[in-house]
Image (cartoon, rainbow, N blue to C red):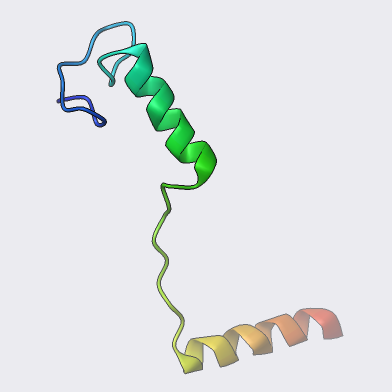
Length: 60
């Protein structure tokens, strides 16, 4: 395994990173929203089913 930021060898203290700088750079990317989890776009049928489920929750 290599450091995900610079591909250097990780150190025990900052594992999986090689240094404090790389670990802080990674944290900064998370805080700025640079990393994102991909989502599946809903097709039209999925959107309709979701709307129906939401409407039922308001009725009950």
